[in-house]
Length: 430
Image (cartoon, rainbow, N blue to C red; front, top):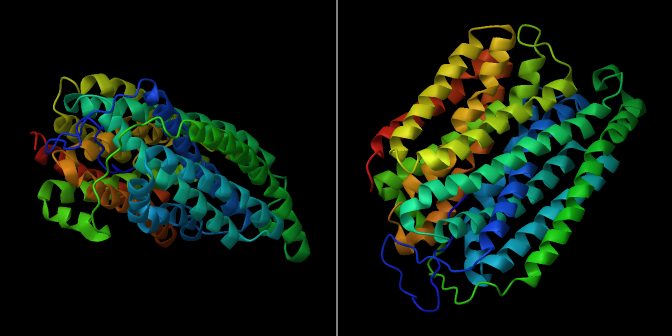
């Protein structure tokens, strides 16, 4: 979720350092809100697909976490090229490219299902995520520029609420469509041709869901293309691909980029394990479909928190709010891993409320006063989202090595502790 190139209008092509020139484009914010909703929902579907593929291909937690690894590796690979692409062709055309790439990724689930190949599913997720990266390069800077600098924290948090709306709705629907199809047998009970046939049949639910998404993305891309000339006078600063790495010498930006890495990793790691965590007999002992639908509470908490946060951040120091919710997340993890039953389950789900304002607040605090360097910062922030690949994979390894999902939650707790430190560090304006 990156900040992309800074933009100036045709009447002022020289924005003040640290202040992006606001874009005057009535109604454009609704378009950006819709994109936040779409890529948020598609990303959260990984939490539903992961337990499905884990069962179909009899994977351990480390192998299953390759779903998130391949998806979020796209941020590492596509982050900087995506920013360069948007600088070359503009925001609206960039959004079209991202949407069409997402559509291609969805359609790749067809051959993956027909061949019942786990590697093809992972490749499809990488292509899908590549499109998501490009769309994110477009959305965050537009929200930042669609209004005054003094309300950017609040405005970005409000936009992220639409992202959370998508992450709340998509898993609930996806759990019904994808997890609800599980047969009375499991892949572990089959072998040979029977196993191949089972995997092909059971993965059809995934394919049907993503074909529907591909059709919707095609329609949205066509609409965006019709309005591709809506933004007049875009001016993008041209710089070298490696220019953003120099920003890491700035303590505030470098620390913030690290926290984006850790936050996304912690959020994704917890979301990926919710289904298996709630299915444990000592937690809630739910069936897979019921546990999958509970993911909506995790992401729904983020939705509620972002709506509250968009108002709170107008009157309270964003850094202090960030530190407080990070400590809250650690506290909830401690409660969840040291209790049993519904208390354990719901305290884990409640971490979504703590996550709510973290990304937009870290993002805006880290990128304060970048001014004309915003384009360079965009690629670095995208790379930082690669944490969604690394932290979940490490968490899966800890779970396999220890035989305990509760023990594995130590890694997200460490991430939140470092984020709390950044909140205190950045409590004053840059």
